Image (cartoon, rainbow, N blue to C red; front, side, top):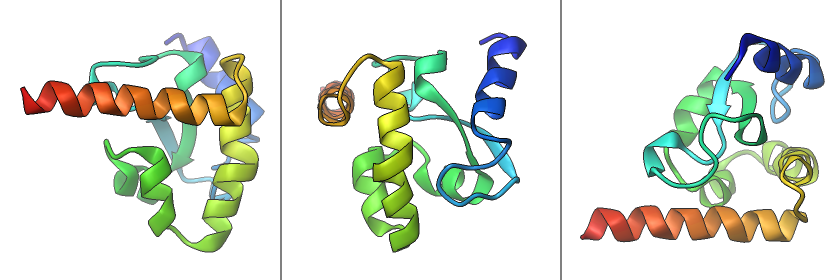
Length: 113
């Protein structure tokens, strides 16, 4: 991903994490690259996230991971982050969640083989 796009992403988020509003952010791939499926290292899949949240998320399914986060983080995840990523991908929030789950299932099935 180009530096120009990374700067655009950071600017769109006002230089802070959508989930925690922290300014200590790093790049996160919403659909983890390690899954080997999904969107990859592209604008439609990258957000800036607080370092601690990013480490906590790791390569977990984001919609499962979020259930163990504080309520205010869950609310921002569903009300701000998911709609933003869904819009970038030309999907509804529900369609985007289904797509992420499909990618996760492909990853798990590949790991089991």
